[in-house]
Length: 416
Image (tube, rainbow, N blue to C red; front, side, top):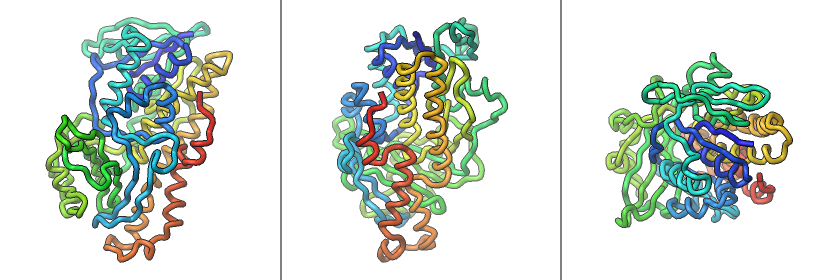
């Protein structure tokens, strides 16, 4: 058995490490000529860090991450609504980590080269399409720069982990059209500054009506300076948006007005924005869940299978779960085709539910509810606006759907 993975992102590299651990030969083909540490911050919830621990990579990730110990919710006036322990501090058996997305990918790449051999991670190969017969599957590649054909590569199975613009997904669903825009645009950045709150806090503040701000540290003691690298995301309802490009530079003047008065006693948000190392603009987009991922010896994984709105820190986490479940299915089933069908039967409905839930009720849905009840004004006592029981019910519903409710996760058997 040999598996060919199209895409060397977080999902593809995690799958490669998982298959290698299971003694299944694997090769990864990535489109870009050189994999670079791009992006900003990413949050890894305990259901993902559990799998990274099982793969023997968690310690390497933790060395360059910040452990989140609490999730804090505030309104646009800086008033505290809820402080909820997270990760080990909440009683999970695994931590919640925040890390630079590019660094996460590079660590996975370094470990994959160490374990698989660098020759099995092939860059500069853009997958044009794949076909198959009774004996195997074949992927056809072009040079992403020149467009010249690089020939065909045969394997027993081809897994598409090539993101929201997946070639195999488009091959099987040619009329799907562009991604679905949510009506919300994001500006993302990282800023070197002093620690805020506990120094290990993740904050969600505001609402979609007023503008929402997400903040968390991703690097402690940057370059020995004692400062922290803070990842932040500004979300604003916007009618128009530019075509998705993770590397498009954003302009402060396009969004700063929504946050100009956010001067809290624990953080000055306009100052954080103005002092950013870089700012990127990206629309909040997803795709409608499709009816089928698997066609014979090919299937989809990660954003190629279930691109979702970036709420609740679940895009990369669900790709990690995909990788582990797919590995188990390949180990437990007699035929490749049956393994991929079982994988799809488990993961497609589960991720489709998260895709739909993220559109209307992420983990911070109660922020919008509170904003509606208060009319955006300050409150005297949050318990007069919403009860702790109601907040808990809304928050727990998301954790259950996404697969990281504490008691269920702690008691669940390993995926592999």
